[in-house]
Length: 504
Image (cartoon, rainbow, N blue to C red):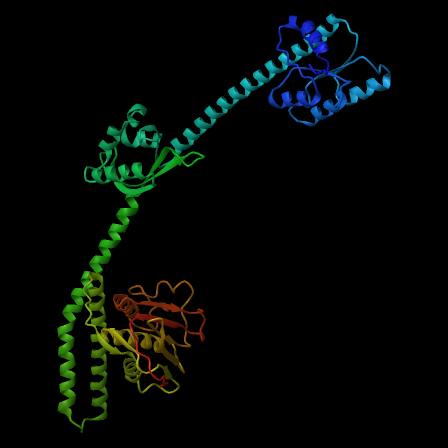
């Protein structure tokens, strides 16, 4: 009730008190607006003629707020009964217009009608809210049912856990696999009975750590299958569920059967180990007869003397070359075995890398017609490394570059210092490395161009092992097109000394 005359407010209070409603009195438009900021009202009785902010302006301000836009307003006035004045009042948002003096019962009936309408609206809103809440619960139950059906159809084993680790749900996959009832599937002791005894301590320890830290968990362990009692390997992942504030409210855990894949990997590993064992044993057995053949070939050439016939000399030279090639292959097989077992030992010392690279280039002299090796290395590059093993690395790289650069091969061997390291590059203009092979060329028995160019595919694997054992890196770059060749990079740690640069 808004009126600037206290007597009028008392009169309104007396008329409306029999309705049993809470009545709030305001002596001005601004005071009424303050009440409306704090509370909702069923009806506003608003006097038109008030000093300052009159009834029309107060109504306009009330209608501007979303919260009070539809609150009914009855204007009370003792003046301006003409039609234009009434129209203006309704335009300002009046629900009704009462002209003083008015009959008390009439006003009371009008107010009672608006109060009844307000209560009915409240009941409708409450019913709507109740219906919406019920619908929400139905939708949630349907969603949960669909979720459980989906989870039950998954091949993975799935558990939902409370924040303390208590199992609240286990899917049909787990119940069928372990032969448990839904009630048993929620018991930790039943779950633990299915874990392989050798894996159980490790599983418990990892799970306790995740509960303590809140971190995701991933581990492999064996679970017993109820149908035949077989233990199969599973990959289990457990993730925390968090609320909007980041607090853990539960856990979701899944287990995926990886037994067949794991057994396949173990079979391949066993086959690979058997192959490595065979190659190592074969290399050991071949070393002695090859050494003997090399000695006999050398002895025959010595005994033949300088008067040996050209045909016999070519034969002896060919035998000696073939024996040396076989000996190198055997040594490569031996080195691969040592790398696999971690038994390739280094004998580090001071190495003049400049001199070493010059010797590598000289080793391949004389080259065939049209082939040449350009050497660009500064003087005084010194490393602390195993000289023989580095010689093996760079010899392998140059030999490969020549092998895959048919015709007029042009190789470039460069070295430079880089922040306390030495960077060596071997660049050719040969066949290049096909796309998709760059990441495989350093694997054992890998040959980017098949068997057409010979070799066992061990040189780069051995080179990588030697470089990495020195604490360095080796990699290859290639556009993959013939004529654009490849570049092999070797970066080795050290404290090189740099003097005047020279080209060779």
